[in-house]
Length: 71
Image (cartoon, rainbow, N blue to C red; front, side):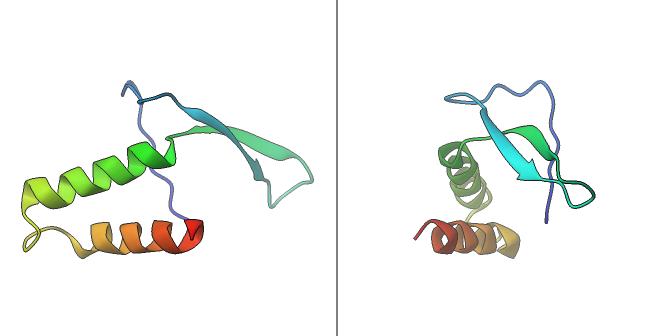
């Protein structure tokens, strides 16, 4: 699992509450996450801003993974 923490950034349209199962107990953890649309927009922006030839491969991998998960 990968976890990116940010504070103070405005989320558009708005954050979503996600319930994640805790591996140490039977309780669930509630976290606020970016909407899928925001994540995709930020990845595309990074790819095009850095130029497709010089962007990090992780951005392409993230787009591919998100596509496969939501397919």
